[in-house]
Length: 85
Length: 169
Image (cartoon, each protein chain N blue to C red):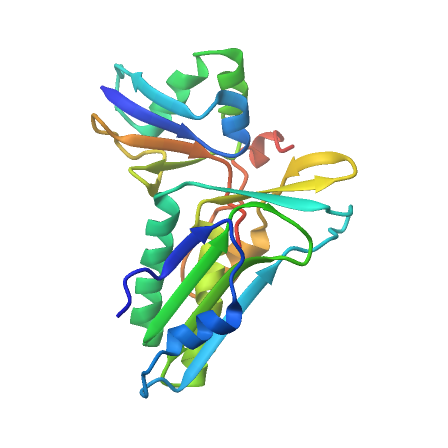
C-alpha cells in the first residue's frame, strides 16, 4: 500500500519531513507494524522510532492508537508528545 | 456565527480587538473569559532567550476545532476563538489566546480552562527552547495530562513508552 509519512519536531530533525512510501505489510497493517518496518530502514530510523521512545501517531490527521489499521493512501504522522499552549 | 475560530499564525494578536470582535453585536452574551499564554524567559534550569514553535498544519486546526465543539456541548459556549502563534518567539511575547463567550461566568471560566487543558495535551504543537546550553525540545508534562483528567478525559501525552525499560532520556 502507498502511505504518506510525516515527521515532526525531533523526529523531523532526525528523519526529514517524510513523504510517500510503498509498504507491503506481512501481517496486520497497523501503525505499530509500520513503525517496526520503518525502524529497519536506517540506523537513524532505528534510533528515532525505537520501542522505548515516546512516539505518538496520527492517522489522517487524527491522533490514533498504534493498533490502528492503516488503509491505502493514508497520511501517517509520527511525532513526540505535544508541548503547545 | 463567524467561520474561522482557530487561527495559527506567526504574527502577534491584539487581545482587546479580538475580545471586542468575539462579543460583536450580540446582547445574549453575559461573560467573556480569556487566557493569554506568554513566553517565559526562565525555566527551573536555564535562561530561555527564545522559543521556536512548530505545528502540524491541517491537523492542528482540525484538532482545536473539535475541542471547541466539545466545549460548546459541555459549557454552552456561544462564541470561541483560539489563536496560537508559531515560529520564533521571544520572552514576554504572546504564544496563545483562548477566548470564550457564554451566558454566565462560571461556564466561561470553565470553558476557557478546559480548552487550554485540552490544547496542551492534544493539539500538535512542539516547543524548542534556546538556552545558553543550546537548543532543546521541551518535554511534555504529566501534570498537563492530570489537568485534562479532571474533566473526565483520559490523557497519556506525557507518558513515556520506555519508562518501564529504563530508556527515558
